[in-house]
Structures are given as structure tokens and as C-alpha cells.
Length: 180
Image 1 (cartoon, rainbow, N blue to C red):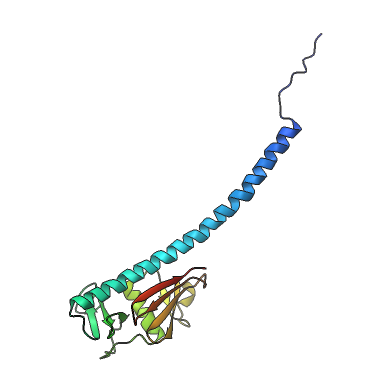
Image 2 (cartoon, rainbow, N blue to C red; image 1 turned 60 degrees about the vertical axis):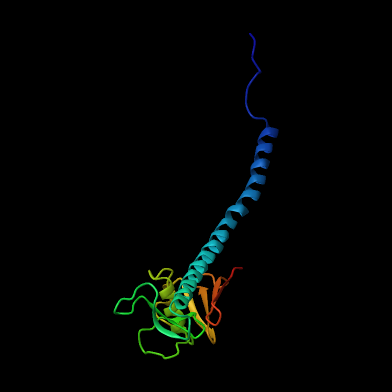
């Protein structure tokens, strides 16, 4: 009687080699997948800043097309509806500063949190991403917190990650982002 000792299977060395290779792949691949979430947030904030800048540039171009001289209240930007819902107020330098329907200001300025909020909402007509000033009831559920920081300047801080910011200077129309 003959017994066959020719069995097939994994050797201990083969199994250990496979485990080591999987461990190496896991240590290399997992950090890259985690980094993708950060990259996505970076890209989203930069895209929002780009959209905001496009709205600012469109308002400035409209101001230039209307003669480009001095402040204008209720400049039709998205529409010239009788309720002035598609208008924006422009400062003396030709940059958008607010979207307030009342009270009228002969020389519109960006000079408080509410101006920052109204301007953001005008630049994003569909109200997305959402924004609020600090201390308002809707602040805990909005995407960005708007803060007036100095004459003609606003910071828009991503609520869930305050290191991400969009900065707007209505003195020169500059829009910049802070990405950690």
C-alpha cells in the first residue's frame, strides 16, 4: 500500500509573506484614503470662494457697464424686479457691499455682520451654501459664519472646520481663501 504525501496547501512562510504584504499595503493605502477627505474639503472651499469671486466680478463689471462712477444702491445684478430682489449695493470703488432693501444708504458701505451676510446671500442667489452672523438662532445649522472684521472686509468661516476661511475685501474686490 502506498500513501501519497503530495498534499497541496500554503506553507507557513507563504502565509506570513502574504500577511506582511497586506500589512504594508494597509499602512500605505489608508493614509491616502484619509487624505482624500481633506483634499475634498479643500476643493469645496476653493470652489465656493471661486463662485463668490465670480459674483463679485460680475457686480463690478455691471457697475462699469453702468458708467463706473461712484456708489450705487440697488444695482440690478440678477434681475431688475420691482421688489429689488436681484439687486446689490455698490461702494464708491465699484465693489459689492451689501444687499439691503431698507434702509437706503446714499453711500453704501460694508460695515457690519449683517452686510456680510446679505452680500453672501446675494452672491449665492439660491442661498447655498448657507451663512449666518454669530449669535443668530440659525448659526448652529449653517455652513459658514460671516463676520465683519474691519472697514469693508468680511471673513466667512466654515462652521464645522474654522481653519477654512474665505476673506472678502470690498475696498479692492479681493477674495482669498485660507486652507490649513
